[in-house]
Image 1 (cartoon, rainbow, N blue to C red):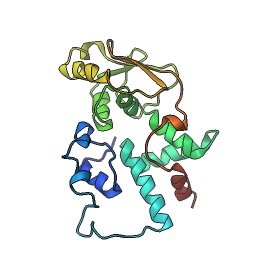
Image 2: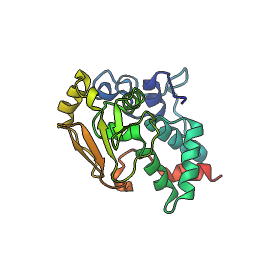
Image 3: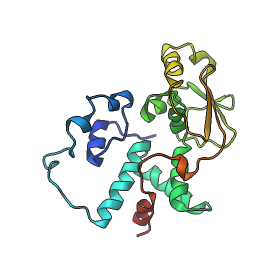
Image 4: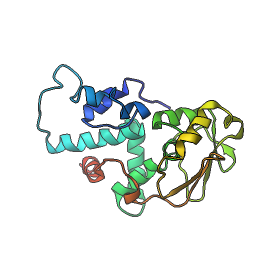
Length: 208
């Protein structure tokens, strides 16, 4: 599966806000937004007024970058969101939020979504007792997500278990850091998704 491999701090600067793509670094003075809070490139410091299309495009790019999804896959998610009952924009965010790599991040088993993706790809995660190595796997209500037993002894997961106890987990998930297991209690509502995205702008962009 294709993925972005360039400098992620550049993406935050392009969107003009912290997307928290590098985990703990984003909370330190080393964060690129704090050091250089303007867009990258030769003309990054120029002030430009965005058109309606520009605003819609930036919102789509922001969503893609937060969840680590490229254009083709993002469009597939949007088409699926249209087919589902309910509000298209909320359906889109729900599909992105229910990706396995995002859930692993939300449960506190990883410091960032990028790291969560790598953890899944390396076979450290199981869903309902079966190893899953597909980051885009869609979790469902009642699914049990756990760090595989043989991986729990790794120093990294011991650190995550200790740090996770101070972490706020979304209400639609439950977690036990002693066993490094979590469960999807229910599907997320819009108010459960705290990403800074105006999904109606994405819907307007694709509806043209």
